[in-house]
Length: 138
Image (cartoon, rainbow, N blue to C red):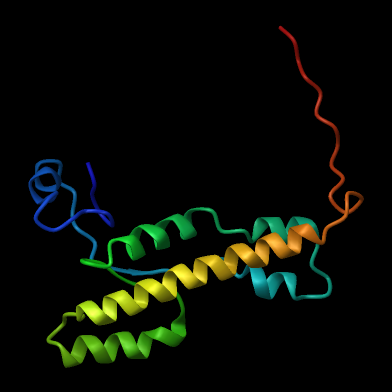
């Protein structure tokens, strides 16, 4: 069963209605500010890790995957274009616009994941030292 962001028009409508799941047709989501936090000279590893968004990328991927029905915006710089497109099309977004925003969302998630990977790859074992975990046997 799919619902919310992944609900497919014409395929999941009845199941969604049966379970009271509303369709989401627009997701506006800004990821945690990992890049700007880690760009600060005083950023600690703990600060960086705290600013890794976990659920946001999954939601962006879900919305972007379902571009046939869902539009997704990932940055405030897109809002004006989104609003202009809605106004020009009687509150609807064209398939081309939804697809373009989908591609932008996948690009944003890839950029975000690369920033995290690059940052963590540069961390030394000393920087990442955490207390050893002790196993408790019962």
